[in-house]
Image (cartoon, helix red, strand yellow):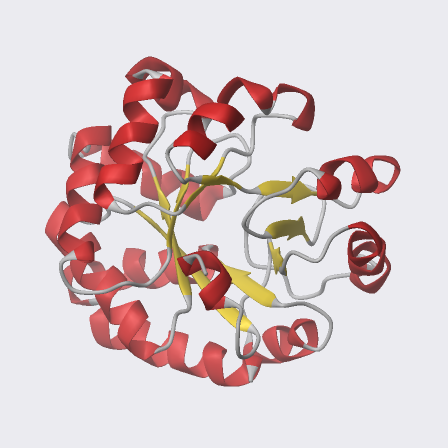
Amino acid sequence: MSRIANAFEDETAFIGFLTAGDPTIEKTVEYILAMDEAGCDLVEIGIPFSDPMAEGVVIQDANVRALKHNTTTDDVFEIVKKVRQKTDVPLVFLTYINPVFFYGYEEFFKKCNECGIDGIITPDVPFEEKGEIADIAAKNDVDVISLIAPTSKERIQMIAGDATGFIYVVSSLGVTGMRSEIKTDLSAIISDIRDVCDLPVAVGFGINTPEQASKISEIADGVIVGSAIVKIIEECGENASEALKQYVSEMKNACR
């Protein structure tokens, strides 16, 4: 069984996101390990990029901070190597396709395999263009995670039928960011997915409170949180470990 499958095996998975290099490379390693220790079942690692089009202001600012520190894709691979010395927690890259293309698809996914990356999420690659990386990723045992948005209803069967790893359901229209209310009929979307696919389904975009996590855990296999975690790092800087542990622990408990 893959590490990603293991993340969803026993109960609703809590998935946390942070941006590599914010505030530093060393602290990113520390914070991933802190999140793992507090109960994070899978960690998404954002590769810094200058035009993160799916992100709200919190994660945009984290990308800017990381790039100001000259965080490179090779630095992110080094982060993963250091994390892998301490834990087997599933790790997934969230990146836009330009850094992967610039690095070279073959070399990028080879490095992913060598350092222990389990999957990749590329929000700016539509399903119809997934083939550009799918075979190379599969050859290197990296799952290409498919996203399904509230506007995807006519395409759910096609996207879900070809998915690997887990399916990322986008809870709300727009960009990432903390929301006080999620109005999308997630139950209907998840039901349509389950009609054609038995992969785990995780919901992200906007989730930030234990109450939201608890509600979504009743219908989904995983809860994804990004902006709230990145906000903690923004506020605490190089002293975020304890705050991250407390927050992740509360959110994980809400998923049980």
